[in-house]
Image 1 (cartoon, rainbow, N blue to C red):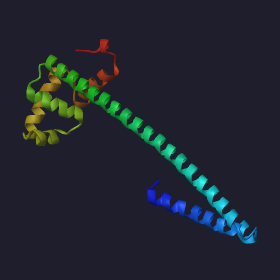
Image 2 (tube, helix red, strand yellow):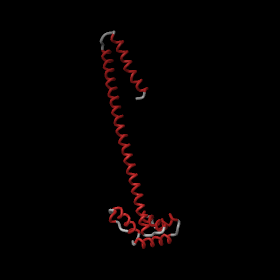
Image 3 (cartoon, rainbow, N blue to C red):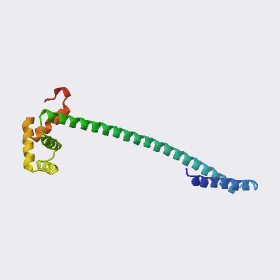
Image 4 (tube, rainbow, N blue to C red):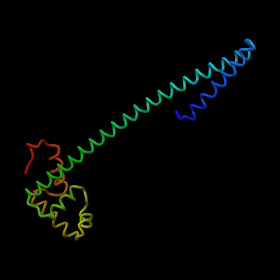
Amino acid sequence: MPPKFLLLLAVFPLYQAWDLYQLVGSGPSFHFYAETAATVAFLAILCVVICERRRALRAFETLKHSADAATRAAAERDAVAQQSTRDFLQSMQEQFERWSLTPAERDVALLLVKGLSLEEIAGVRETGAKTVRQHAANLYAKAKVSGRHQLAAFFFEDLLAPRSSRES
């Protein structure tokens, strides 16, 4: 708790103790019993507040610990996903080599698998749409697939199939 808050909490019991000390000399009275009850109630409430604050701090620490663990787990999943993506792209590049694709055909193949249209690929590569169509036709022939769907399926089936059953 902040020091100012603790100081304020200490003032009331000190005042009450002083007040009760002053009343003791005059003998027991209603005022004495009322002041005693108020002091006891204040101290009881203060104990409840302090205990609740400690419980809330423990709960906060538990939540913070859980959040930190979740952040670490997410970072680990991200690292695994990034490695998986790198492995997948490496696998694609190796297959492109087996098919003897030119660098332009490799670019077009990668962008087709990513889902870009021929016009989008032409824009990305800053070439004409007819050039992209020709590269796509060449790579389909070399890969022995009939189009972009079979090309994408080739790689995605490769992801789902065990390594020993991959086709060249």
